[in-house]
Image (cartoon, rainbow, N blue to C red; front, side, top):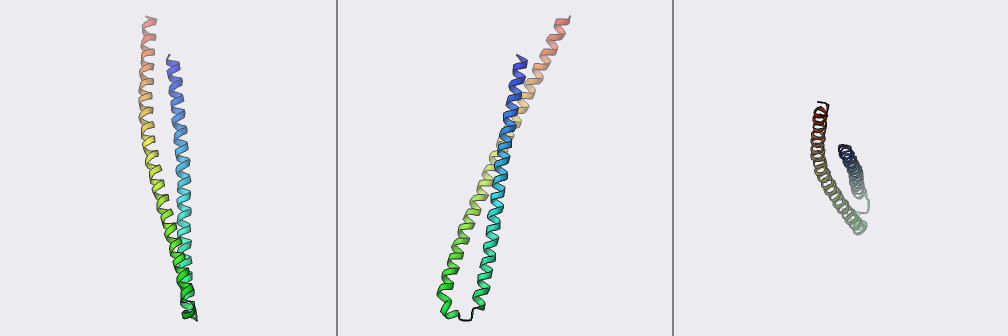
Length: 134
């Protein structure tokens, strides 16, 4: 009975460790996605700066004004799309982190409860062995 209980506890612990590993992998993946979005955002900022310099140095500003306005709008729209993706990614990371923390806390409580159970089982076994030997 206690062997079965110990085996069940070990299986529970193994499953909890596996779940934690999966959460950590997902969290790492989201962190990479977040960093990639950050890099995209920085690259876009550089593109905007490059475009701004090109516009300033353009000799025939009047004839190019319309096309330049269009380009600037496209860059702004792309920037807004990237910022939205960036925000979404951050929210996703925060949500997964909260879930992972909650799961970790739950697993820790379960492990503590299981350890207490195991200790009780061991004490009972020791006590029953002591009673038998007398």
